[in-house]
Image 1 (tube, rainbow, N blue to C red):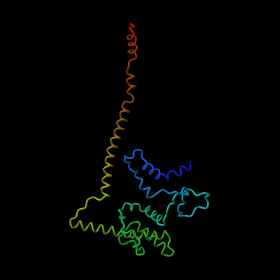
Image 2: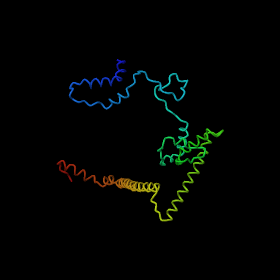
Image 3: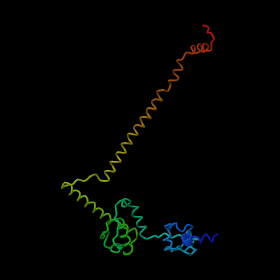
Image 4: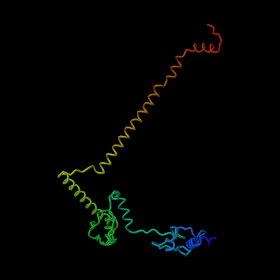
Length: 251
């Protein structure tokens, strides 16, 4: 049974071909399955043993049997750790829009990171810091990862400050000649936040008033039942009970 389960998937195409050629009703046209042409051009493997995937890292000698032996290993590059560190320290850089379209797939080969973070055709972003840091680590003697990261960040902050100053000057010049700019994304977000806060304040005020009203009513009714019990005359109660039962009352 085990052998049949292993060989049956490889004979799907032959079985389907036999069924299509030997139909019960020859005049009835039967549509081929969608996968028929695909399996015909790319047949399944006839090797029943699982192939050993390429190893990208040395196995741990302490483990007797490596886990996930036949699963593809994770490919890790040196830039991944540098990129993770940068975006952990600068999470808002991920919110900036980026252009990821390449012309011929060889754009990275035209960049020269020895000249700085500004590269032709590539806007300033976190990837510039990562590549600049990696270049300094491999090309400058006695350059540690932390020191290269600090130098690359210093260049990055200076360029970001220049961009902000240029943007402010351009906006002031445009406003001077009559241009009008709407609300920024930050101001729109603060306005929406203020609206939600005011709505919450009204809801909270209603809840507080309801709680206070309930407490006041509880304090007002407290002791009324005892006062009513004290006002009731005991003689009247004793006089009314026999009358209710039909017994004459002596006075």
